[in-house]
Image 1 (cartoon, rainbow, N blue to C red):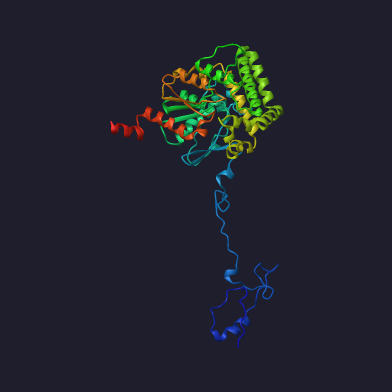
Image 2: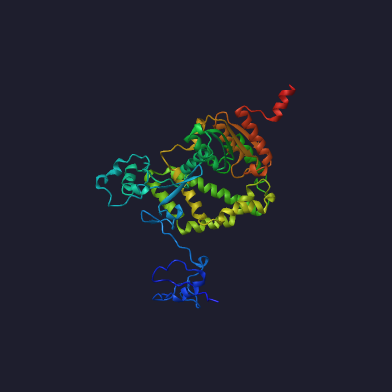
Length: 443
């Protein structure tokens, strides 16, 4: 019985396959070749030079390269992005871009021909579009010099200008030509500013408890209230306060009045002093707010009065559930929330002292689109008389008061709130409700 010997590697090509009966002699006549060095990785102890089964051999990797780039080692776009890269999503497509402002263009190696460009800035952004097969890399050497010519400053993400831009961009994202903007409290400022920026994009405005007019606090004994203001003041004076009888609520009410008084005092002080002093004063305030003192202060205020503020924004604080509290305190879990709140405050201060911009409160008469102003009858943050003042300043604006609700009628009385808004929109755009259709059919 001939013994089968595994085929070793050969020094020369073997002859043609022999007849099966000569296989033993043929196998013994072959001289195996022992390669120098260690045995191959697939060799076994029993047959150190044997050829393994094809299934046991490691797959042979074929090296692919394009222009010197290994095509078997490709990365996602995010991993290839530079530190100054940004992505903007347009219709579901993420577009890579870079933004360079004149504040970033401090590179002294730039072309000396435009060293005096700061004196002739055009004040417009310059958009650079690269060619086929290229990228933003092709603009590397001229981005900063052109940024100095453009003179465009980056938009503060906490500013009103950015909020307006984001609102209009979101309307674009929806693919709509117009939209109805519904703002609440400080959000009403954004809605109105967006209207003034692009009135053709705003079909109607719904302003809920609009924080547009800064409350003016008068000395005791001075009776200079308007009709709505007098009614609210009488209601407050009837029991010494319009807050619930809980002592903590009274403390919060006094603290809130103090904060609003301080805010009004600072705004009036900033407007009253000269431009140079005003600039120095604002810089000092901003420096304090951006310091560790400002961070500790905002943490203290939010810790001691944050939840209490939510409860007092409601008509009936006892109905504020844990779910509501968790919803309002959730942003406090975000890293850097203190600085975001401080930067927003700083932005409001800087906007309020801008001499080149007319305050929104002085332009309300210019609004020509349909407007509905909504107030809670017991709003303690933006009193009803203050909200009615906004409605009177806008030509043709409707005014609705939702009873048994405070600063958040959309949360406390959602069904009544939706009914009020629906009635306004159907009237504004000529689409009768189902009840009106039934009434018309019966008539």
